[in-house]
Amino acid sequence: MKTATVRQLRHDFGSVLTWVEAGEAVAISKRGKIIACLTPPPAPKKPRKARKHPDFLGRLKRIYGDKIVHGDVVVEERKSRPY
Image (cartoon, rainbow, N blue to C red; front, side, top):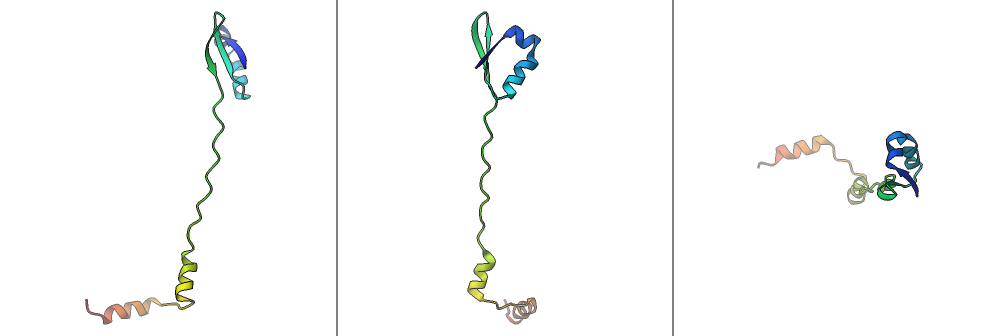
């Protein structure tokens, strides 16, 4: 851990910031006592894996096979049944 004084922060903040950007923690001292610590942010978390959605088309094929129902059949059946 590197150490910097309050005076160094005021006059040469760029070099202290460079240390932090490089991944080092910097202790800030005032009159010989450490009063604060500058640390880089924690590493970002790994992204979650994409969830796999169920295979709805595969399930429909297993249940009904390759039978295709046209929209006309549905309309005719609705018209034939009184509600």
